[in-house]
Amino acid sequence: MPLTRSPGLFLLIIYLSTSSSLAAAATPPTGHFSRAVVEVGQPLDYELSYQHDPRQEVVFPDSLANFGTFEYVGRTWLPTRTQQGQSLDRAVYHLRTFSLAARQRLQLPVLVLRGAHDTLRLLPAQAQVQLRRVAPLLAEGTLPALRPDFRQEPLAPAFNYPFWLAGLVGVLGAVGAALGLFGRRWRGRYNLYKRRKNHVYFLAQFARHAERFALSRSAPVVERAVVLWKNYLSSLEETNLNSLTTKELAEYFNNNENVRRALRATDRVVYGNLLSEDAHEVDAAFQRLLTFAEQQYERVSTGV
Figure 1 (tube, rainbow, N blue to C red):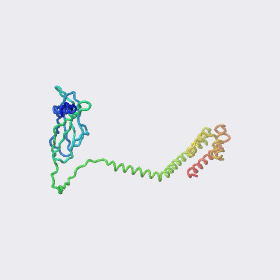
Figure 2 (cartoon, helix red, strand yellow):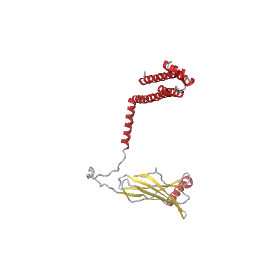
Figure 3 (cartoon, rainbow, N blue to C red):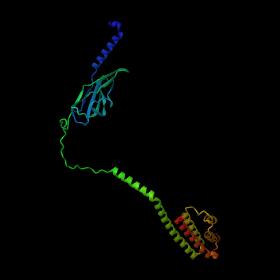
Figure 4 (cartoon, rainbow, N blue to C red):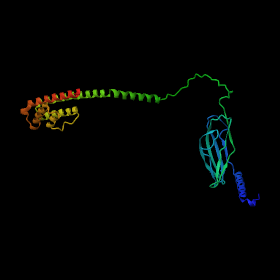
């Protein structure tokens, strides 16, 4: 077919020949391993370098490249060096292999971007490394000979976190179960002990106030005794009785006769200063208040 009748074919031939000539003219990259012999699982470095025009855009392989029989671990970029109008880019790929092939090869490409729709792929010469076998080759179907070794290897003491964590969970579970089964009983016994202790303290203090009144016949002593009695009943009843008047206190305790008569007698002494006439009645009021406090203590302690 004449070329004058096929201009498209002519342009295609020119483009392919130009691309081929440019690819052939471009300096290929170089790649080599850091050592010639490697063992299974041993770290190994592969260095890829490319010298090019500083105006070219060059792309090196990343972690998604095809590393063949090698496993990608990481990479290190080396700074670009430009001398005498030529730039040198280098990258070191950190690899390791678990393949048992005697000779293993690797060839990573370098891409040169030439416009929006043109990319030149350059390949270095294949680099190869030889695998050093630690275990000897065995014939098919045979097993390696086992050597007994009775030497004891020293081990560093380590804290057994799972064991102690399981023990802690077990202890917490046992404590929780014990609280669930006996917690109410223990709290009841503790409250009973605390209530008994407070009651003994109240009896001692109230008897002391009564004794002081018998010696001094003083109105402030009567007032302090009544305040002590109210405070004790407030803690016993778990309510605030200090702000209640005599009438309100009597109503709170269902108009108890002892409470009503005792508080009236103490009020006459505290607010009316009638000690000369009501001294013996105050002694009786103290006894009524003490008797009522003991009755309330017995009622609360027995839960009646």
